[in-house]
Image 1 (cartoon, helix red, strand yellow):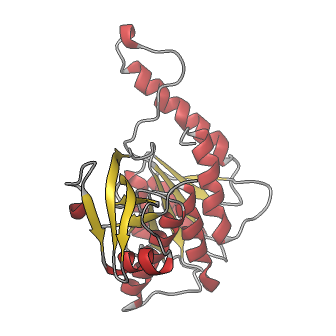
Image 2 (cartoon, rainbow, N blue to C red):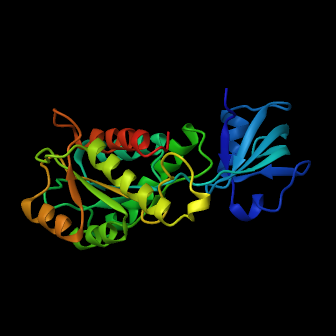
Length: 273
């Protein structure tokens, strides 16, 4: 069974080496000591949210902190290619459910999107508080999944902002029920093209059999619309920016389901799993 995970500031964990002692305070320390009730001798992982994992053993606890001894220091590389989810705001906390599940499945970054047909609207201070709430959801989901890295939550985007993200991506998919190509087929085609480019850039004497790994540059962007779907103008803007419409399956999925389903398919097709 994997160890429970708690997050500390990167600056606090970076200098530590095996044999060092570390005390986790604040809300995380109180949670570990009073809610989880961790006791001396139990294993626990301390992470910085950016890929650093310290495998530790609890040496002591009080009401406000947990003290551990570092046994092993692990630097876990980021998954390739990176996955970014653009999730339209949706009613009934379905957008938060999508973000939570996608985090557990391995998403690397997420952006809230104010789509034309989004019933939920983030205005004024909500545009600031909304992403903060998503960050809390993402952090809790990452901890549940025992992740050493916590996905980045970006600011609220409009159509122009989504187009900027599309331009920066290696592959951008609009998850749309009217698409004629499947997510899996597009992913395989893109993977093979990227692998061919990587092999072409390798010296003949160093070429290896099989597919080369997909390069990290660019990454994969998934765009999920609201309950009422994307408008024709939004789809046109995204395709003009370089995105491709992609079909998940025979049935229409909820806004909370489409993103996580795409993460699963893409993780398998692109070798992240």
